[in-house]
Length: 385
Image (cartoon, rainbow, N blue to C red; front, side, top):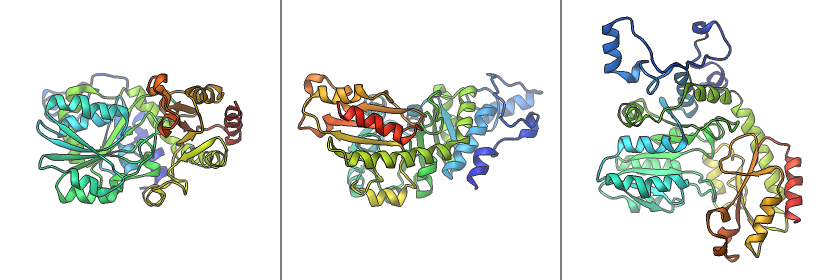
């Protein structure tokens, strides 16, 4: 399906709303029926009905169709956050006594899901180094029902071979799910590589303007319906019509924004690679990256997120660099118009800083839509402090 058609036309029945270019925000919690028979039918099959906006909503439905098509999947569900798009499907599909094999070092709240929440329901998790597919195979138990991936992850960017893991999982009748937030559907399509469920934070590139929090999961119609009928309705982690509309707006410019971000990032990575105060640049599309060939094989391009290891002898040096940046804002997340920075030292006490530990000198940068020369000048002055 043509990308331009998906972003600009798919799901938009304009003749139903006065040929408006932008779809309406159907800000209604409730929907009425003309007969008891119609009402009864909707209650019996809410997946295919517009009954109550905790389930389906016309504005959200447009977004669902677009997001599913972007991934090459059959259907999608949209949630109130990225972590909800991971947690709710897992709660819907797994049961007490089940086991998960997860890649090590996923998103921090995904770790909390596996270590804090799922054990309350009798679900256990084994974390493995995902750079080798055989590590997943070795961790599989008789009760393993899910292999969870995040390729790349979002601080050190380790990849997993998505096709190889999908093939392994299918041979064992195990579901696979990946967090695709780093890439977006433009730069990577795991569903087409055999992954069953593809989750991502729509807050990031899909929204693109740092004004909405949302998540999405795509997959087969059978799996999405199972999630919808179970915990999606039960937990109520749905997105609002207004936020769905903002995401539809964001999709219009997604390829253009990513093109700009990817091009700018490569220029900035090249500058930092040759700077004397930078010990190492960690970026999947840089030739020095250990999995560079795999990155080129399964990703169309890398996004604007990468990390540097600063040559620093103290926590003060790391903090001075970050505090001196004027156009990279100290904040979590990424994927918006603004450039961001987050040092690893924010996650542990200053007294624990160890200059010999590269991870303590690790700084994540996100390149936004600003002119790359503007950002390079900012990095240069901060590195001189």
